[in-house]
Image (tube, helix red, strand yellow):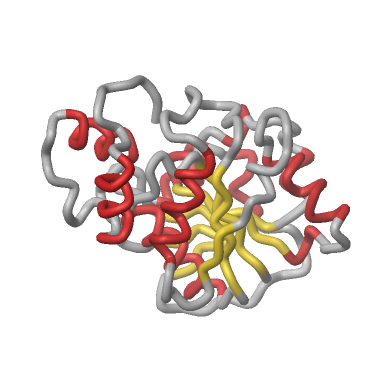
Length: 217
């Protein structure tokens, strides 16, 4: 299976990398594609340009085995719906049932609001990864209609992919940080060391990104 981790990555931070690594290990994914969105449907417009967000993702994962950046959403017009992204993979000849869309547990809790829900859940596997304040097992109670298709997977336990499109719950430690936090730190001149990969911090500094406060996530 190939994992897909979408997001604004405005900027990419160590929590994103933790989520990608945890899903790759737990599901023995061939690779994980980090996909910066062009126009996120559920959030404010990104503060940084798509070219900068893509460059930061590439810097963050340089040398990381099995992690790659993808421009599939940046190259497309319109809102970056997951269903539309799956359409593009299908048009490229990829069976979407071999794909696994990865999200933090906090983001996955909102899946009933996603475009093309619930049909979306039949098109590929999903993986939700614990985030600070949102343990993944809580999703069973938050999304009771989906509980029957949820499969719990420990980070150190490899789980073979079932034939039916499933929702994998991956309990893993991920850093307590958000892109909103990072932007706020930068805007007030505080250090972001440990919140973003060093190469991302260097890129932000070199390009003077996020120097002023702005709304968004």
